[in-house]
Length: 308
Image (cartoon, rainbow, N blue to C red; front, side, top):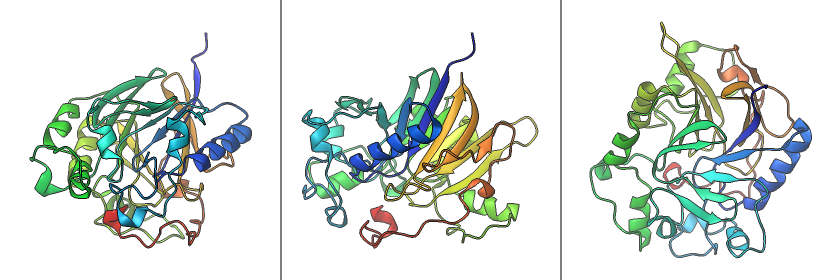
């Protein structure tokens, strides 16, 4: 029998826009002529019931709060959606299930750090961003805006828990690994887009990627599309990193992979269904869409990086 074929889609920071993501998946299915089997969200999903929730950062209260329709059973996600935590979530709702749970039919929180097997794929994950001052502090119950902010930082024991994972098909993180922009600069590839600041990302996530060596890494947080590879020296496996834009526009917020068994055979960005990469080809900035889409004025672009 031929290996099972899967269409796995990564989506960038949703920030409450569940309806938009559902419509995007409909469009991608039509373009690829097949169903989407699995949707993976890289944090800042914001499954709040109300946009003005007091636990939500003030800059985020203009964002939609569409999750209530799913939580109340009025609407159901058509495809299974699994997400990690970013640094903007309803942390009070997530706190008592660090190993993950189902928030609503077909909406699953993976948890703070761990390993999950989904449709035959081995998927590792680390929620949150790096804040050195809180790395070794215990996690407090997020009952206020301040403690909720602290809940968006990963802790040392969580990193330790996943540091021995191996043979991962996918690794989901919210914040970029440090140094991948410099890696792209060193490659010197011709690109029409400006490169992000070299300091984006954190060293803990980078150390994990260098240690775990997942085949693919999906990131969010910085609201920019990016593509780079790490590893490949000698017999060290290659980790292909795809950083996703926020889910305000699909061009670089949607990244899909088609699998045959556990082998990724092709990948692409956005909703056109056009293939940007095939197995055996290099993965770098030349695989991004040619021109970055312009920002929409109504999608919260005035926020500073830490608020992402």
